[in-house]
Picture 1 (cartoon, rainbow over the protein chains, first blue to last red):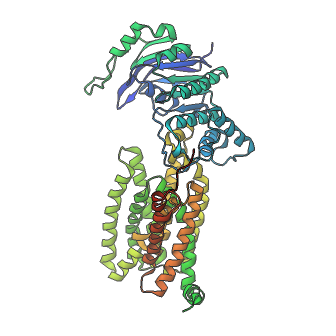
Picture 2 (picture 1 turned 135 degrees about the vertical axis):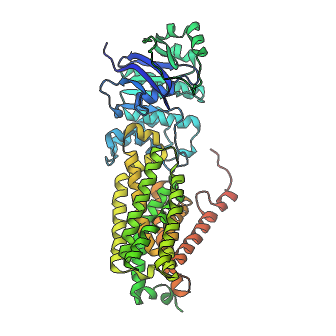
Picture 3 (picture 1 turned 45 degrees about the vertical axis):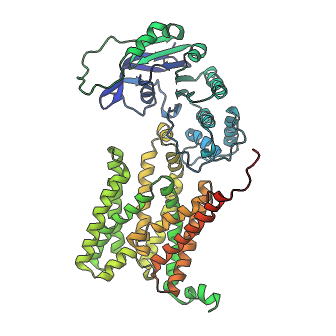
Length: 251
Length: 290
């Protein structure tokens, strides 16, 4: 199988401290990958590196020819100014940036796409509401609608189901599976192990260093999970520069 | 005194009043939309800071060529860009927030500007620099103001989308486009040219008033941004006109008169605004069924 994303000995972090340490591995096109691990394991950092917001401290991430606009990224703490006076319709419409850019018109076909996306996430009838009036779950639905419109080949979701009730997360999970069925590559950071086991074929277990990467059933063994939990989370201020590469490859 | 002599006659009789009115209309068209973005991006005080930062440049222009408006405008333009770009670069490349770096720049600039003017000029000059004089618009200055308004509207149309997206969801814009930082810097430049325009009319201390106050007013009348921009422009023009009339009929100087009218409109909006006004909140009517 060809390769979509390739991590080659990637280290990502902040102020020289690694948050993801020496990760290598590959993601096939159309994969549905769950990234799990304790808080502070580097899941969000990995995603930030993946979408190009964070530069790797060492190593490299190859996206197999995807450019930034082929990636849809839904961050964990969406940095959204909810007091900003923008309607649901316009907000979702920003997902069309890839085709409209600065000046492209929003004509009838685009409006239909926006309506369709809103319908798919169950927000029909909310078009003219200002985003500040939405609940947390509705906002998450809104963000999924925007991801839909981005029509991206790689979709990166950082803890998309946090603080979301069962019905909403069920609806949104169905969308994720649709995307998978359409052949898009989807990577999602998740905490609900049962959900991962039930719906995600491939899992990366991360605890700053990759603990295991492969078929979900094998990765989520009790032993691996315990290992992941033991790995330390704290930065060591006086840590020496990392010279020797530990054994590579997790996948 | 009939209504006509009070409200219209000043403009038909005196050319300087017509010029002032034209200047106010241009200022409102350019400045008010910028003000709306300043408010929505939580940069209201940044605009204020930048207005003061223009002062030393204008003062140097004054030092070199006396009370020549064109020289002062050019000086202000240069100083404003310098400070805006410096502050923008400092905050984007270090952890320091933009408002903090601007506060430093503007305090220093204000002190420097007042010193320069005082060394050469009189107290009248200083008053002119600080509070402007819209009744003394010459052709050159009027052209500069009109040009600035035109540039502002065209450029704002170009950077509108990235600017809106960056205000509401900066991370999203960063993930789809690199337009965020250039759009922000261009926006800072627009603030500067509008402040330079306002500088002549209202002076350094009040220049930002015709941007921020209309934006504040608009917030109480519209829920979406295009509506806000319209309300802001109209209320800026209205304040400008009423302020000119007020200053013509009384002894209040034009700049403060304009800002006072805008402030009065603002207070009325806070009280009676359709969106979140005090009265609306006190008497919201019976709650709805769904």
